[in-house]
Image 1 (tube, helix red, strand yellow):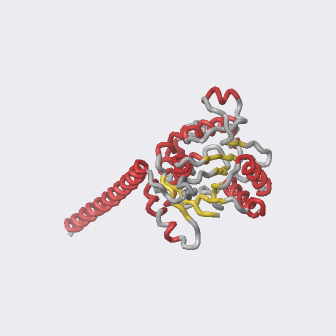
Image 2 (image 1 turned 60 degrees about the vertical axis):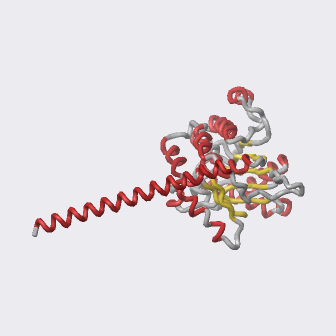
Image 3 (image 1 turned 30 degrees about the horizontal axis):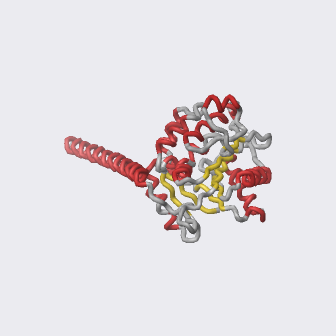
Length: 294
């Protein structure tokens, strides 16, 4: 009898190991297939329908697009699929970063890192950047990236940002750069960070003002934790969102140059620690963005 039980236990262990091997193999195959789709798409450069409306002459109507983010590195960690999509199609991309990310006392360094990351992402830096930064990074000053250090908009959990102050600042940036489109966080802010969420409410406050109702605004859709860390596999689920959203305008954008996400985030050297390297590798936001019209 004992021999029979030992044999059954052995068979059970063999089947369990085979099951795990099948699961791991399936995940690897799906991961590789997803990466192949992204890389193949980067060579074919599909036109896409997002911001692809044509002028009378048949050329694409170039947009002035403002990314409104909370901290230096938000643009590289979360928005690179969209930034790459827009720059590859010749749209004018601007970044408004509402703090220098000084929660750990590294604000000045993080500000410099954002300018360098912006150069990697083909977003040109702001005219107000200090001369030594321009010389160090060989950056030509332009009005493309603005980084604020407002006393009422300091980085940190528990730091509440006033939506009226945010709306006024964003409106000034819109007027100064003739912005016609905004892209920002949704009301969860990907990670749930209070500053990300406050930025969303600041943009929404702005949109409620009669003077800015013609501004087109889009929010980056937050996903659950399983999809968030599924890497390129999430492209299949994200691609279903536009089909399922019959009453909302939704676009799914693949990262046509995923390597840029790593290169841009690596410029934020003060933040480029092991767990953020893992985040960029496994985060679905490295490979795909789902945008919903606000």
